[in-house]
Length: 198
Ligand SMILES: CC(C)(COP(=O)(O)OP(=O)(O)OC[C@H]1O[C@@H](n2cnc3c(N)ncnc32)[C@H](O)[C@@H]1O)[C@@H](O)C(=O)NCCC(=O)NCCS
Ligand SMILES: Nc1ncnc2c1ncn2[C@@H]1O[C@H](COP(=O)(O)OP(=O)(O)OP(=O)(O)O)[C@@H](O)[C@H]1O
Image (cartoon, rainbow, N blue to C red; front, side):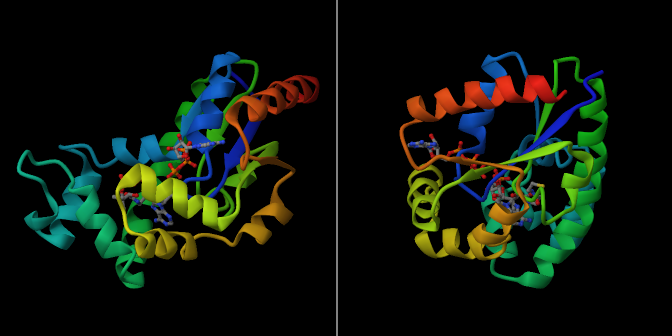
């Protein structure tokens, strides 16, 4: 079991997936909160059953899976609905992530979570790495990738911890407002540093 945990965080569209893939190429296992968040609402799960009870069948697509775009539009426009969903899903996500972290066998393991600090997941980490870009870059990359409006991207960013607060909390910060080929060189250096810390 890997006992040293790196918490990797950053707001929406900051580049967590792109950069955690670079660590995976170096042989490091990654547990990603966004992937776990999908697993806990798969058809047949208790998570999806509770969501359907709360929002009605209207929240399902025709094949019976969660209509993520619909739920996204609801929760980022209504704070109380977002709280309801967070209260349901965050404990399920945390439990499943901790189980997956325990099973990791690489030299160290990475916990990727957009809400690492917001949800106190950093308490499980030995070290934290912030993937850092200006808000304007988050908006450009998110709207280009997800087909969502600038307004919705801004609402999602506003619901996350401000960049400056995350910069203060993180042990390391990686600037992702440059070419990924340049970022990759720093990832290699960070990896070598982490190997000396484990
Ligand atoms: C609302 C949902 C269905 C939208 O799904 P969608 O496929 O469009 O987005 P995805 O799950 O890939 O999330 C994209 C990004 O949105 C942001 N985000 C998602 N949920 C939240 C939230 N509750 N609060 C703040 N930001 C969030 C994160 O930056 C995340 O990386 C989904 O995000 C969800 O179930 N959210 C609640 C669970 C959660 O908090 N997930 C974040 C990881 S713990
Ligand atoms: N340095 C970079 N230069 C240009 N584009 C980038 C860079 N880093 C990431 N991207 C692109 O920006 C988008 C967001 O990156 P990525 O999906 O890795 O972010 P994320 O933090 O995982 O996002 P989310 O929180 O929404 O899951 C993707 O389309 C990705 O290809």
